[in-house]
Every structure is written in C-alpha cells, then in structure tokens.
Amino acid sequence: MLESELKIKIESHADIYSRLGGDFKIVGGYFSKDIYFDSEKFDFSKNDKVFRLRKQSDKFFITFKGSRQSDNTLIIRDEYEVGITDYEIGYKIIHSLGFKPCEIVEKRRVEINYFKFENLKIFLDTLPFIGDFMEVEGEKTDILKMIEFINLDLNNSTQLNYSELFLKYCDENSILLKNPRMQFTFYDENMYYKKRQQ
Image 1 (cartoon, rainbow, N blue to C red):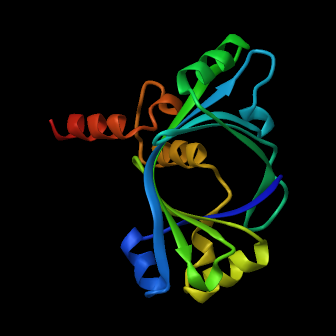
Image 2 (image 1 turned 30 degrees about the vertical axis):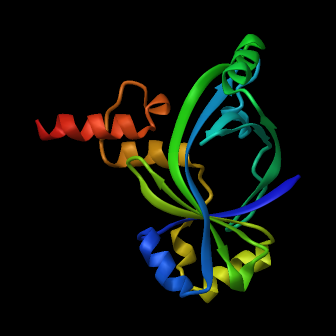
C-alpha cells in the first residue's frame, strides 16, 4: 500500500490546537517505541528501506517500508504493516531470522481528527532531543491544502525520518553519544542533560 506523508517541525502541540480552532477532537494519545532491524545479508537503511517492530501502548506491529519515491515535499513509499498479539515473540522471531536491532526511536504521539479534513490522519509527535513534529497522512493535494489552510510554513517540512533528523541534530549540536542510533530515547535524553548540568 502506497503511503503519502508530510512531516513538519512545529512550535508546539498547543500552537497546532490554536490553528485548528474548535474543529478537532483528540482521538487518542500513546507512547510508542520502534526498534529497527538490519541483517548482515541486507542493510535496510543503506537501501532506504525500513523493517521495524513497534510497541504502541498495548498494541504491537511489524512494518516494512520501501524506498522513498522522488517528491519535493512529501515522503511517499510503499508500506506494509501487520498487527501481532505478543511483542516478545515477535522480537524473537525477527531475531531468529538473522535480523539485529540497529536503531531505537521513542516518541509520545497524539492522534487528531480535524473535522475540515476528516480524510487525513494527523499525528502530533514529541521526540527526545529534537522536540515536536506533526505528521499528516493522506492524499497529497489534501495534505497541502490543509497545511495552507492552517497557515504552516512548508519550509519547515522534511523528508528525513526521525532517526535521520536525530543524527543531524546530534551533529549540528555536538551531542556525543556512544551509540546514537540506539539512544534516541527519553531516558538517554534525560541522562545526557543531567550530565551536562553536573
């Protein structure tokens, strides 16, 4: 299934709520932890593909994403996802097939239903280190109309994934971590800034 998504840096969740006026409702909120996998035979990240295991509150998913297609604004790629009932068993199956964890991404996510664009999926994400983002999924024309309607600057959008944004942030801010790909967590953020205050 082809997925079209816009990822854009935002000032805060509160700013988006203000822009949406009273025309929305919060569908739900949850903590999400993604583990990304690679293998010796196939490096997904080098081939711009994604193979991940997601823990989303009490729901669990295995996802594959194909390479990003060429687009000036959106992230467009094939995505296949299946829900599983047992996270630990899912991890063991993936590991037993020869795949090893290569990245961890944690986020707090709020899902919104915007009544003026009900065909779109809208998520407000808070991530360690890099802050708040909005993701919008749906048809490209509808996504761009919505962004224009709530007066967000498309120059703040990005086609990088969260891991890539984090590595870029670490580089630009001279944040030195032992293994940054595995330390994109709220715990590591907390420990990093605690050490800086000492």
